[in-house]
Length: 310
Length: 307
Image 1 (tube, one colour):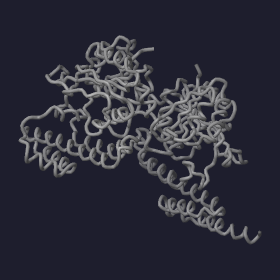
Image 2 (spheres, chains in turn blue, green):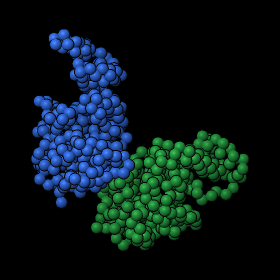
Image 3 (cartoon, rainbow over the protein chains, first blue to last red):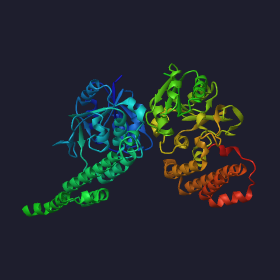
Image 4 (cartoon, rainbow over the protein chains, first blue to last red):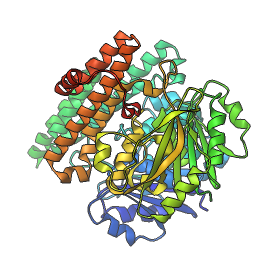
């Protein structure tokens, strides 16, 4: 029996799925790959029938990504569980490396890894997400959104689900972060910087879940207030909880401004406006800092400069 | 591999739990018992330690509520058939075997239910059982209007949840109803026309979930509007049918709440009565008025005890 199960929730992406499955099968010598088809109405079922060495779970009623992950967990037999989104890729051998980290730190609840950022065709750009190697009690850092974790970069010990519960279906898009917070509240965790996953970066129009960046981050900030009622957070001082709120809002405002500035020269005005207003709502003073305004103005000017140069 | 997994959700009821476990052990010949402890603060871990050989004990570190607890029970169980049992209810001897035999004989059916005997606070049969008749086969439309399936009497296939999704965590108290609706939409339902469980009835002091009728009706109404009436079968049936169902639901719920209110009135709990009557009037204003005018507050029918 495989030691690790890798769960790929998929919805209506038959053209991307085979690539993800293939990368998953190469990520470990012995891995149970479970594809959970979240009631896709296209040819996903047919595509899955042609894929070998996978366990295909078909949901007949759409459950959303968190519900599909839960169904995958229900069907899994491994001691460890990894996840992969249907448009991302696992790096060959990466899962075995992460399992070795569990041997190094047997009490760890989950192990995180590095992420290579890629374009819409899943070709890695030069960039990689800033993942710092860390270990131990990362509860506060994860709660503050300062540890970069995506579903595809994390391997979880299955028994953790038996102490903290399953993914929350109500939190579409941030259900994974919610889970990492709940696990790290109770278990030490380990994050390594060695890349394990290739992340297909969302663009404003790419219709990925994460295209709605502002909405997700805003939901995360809102949900954080509820996570602060976890016993660990409750036992901390009110000052610490307030500091967490402030830091998170500023960090989110930074991210939103930076992404807006990045997309503005490509003409994504509504995306940028949404980001700007969200950051304004979260932290008005911070969003209107001179550096932020400067960055935005510069990126607004740049298309004209490019046009003039051309 | 065992044939049936009995998932017992428990929280702070270590005095009642052994009785539930014993009853589950006697209910079937090939049973796996999973006790999921919703972060109890009492002696529950010690009590479960006495059953190390017969029971898989899963302890949650953080409180999840009934839906989340049952989901953890599902991922911790292995059998192809699943039964839920609450820590204060009982299964009758041999009943799991009987129900499993019927399910084995009908591979197309998704679940089977049966009758529950009303129990007093000590969980001894107190006379009467529920439901009076057990309809079977296609129960989708009936279940959309009211829940007549007592949760401790059900055995369902694990395949139902892998196909239709896990337990709703966001509707504590009506999450079982939600599951029956979703199963009945796709599968025929079987029934064993005899008592299979004892169902401890809530009293004012027992602090059970079921003591809060109007809140459960509100939750169920929300589920019906946001989820059940959006299931493919309900969509296909057309808007007129859906409106009819929503009306029937409101009428029934208003009726039940009024009966509950009548009981409150009899026991001179005027505040409770006012609250319940208000909730009833909100659900179905005309219906509630009609009932008040037409029905003397005398007998309390069986149906209103389920919620």
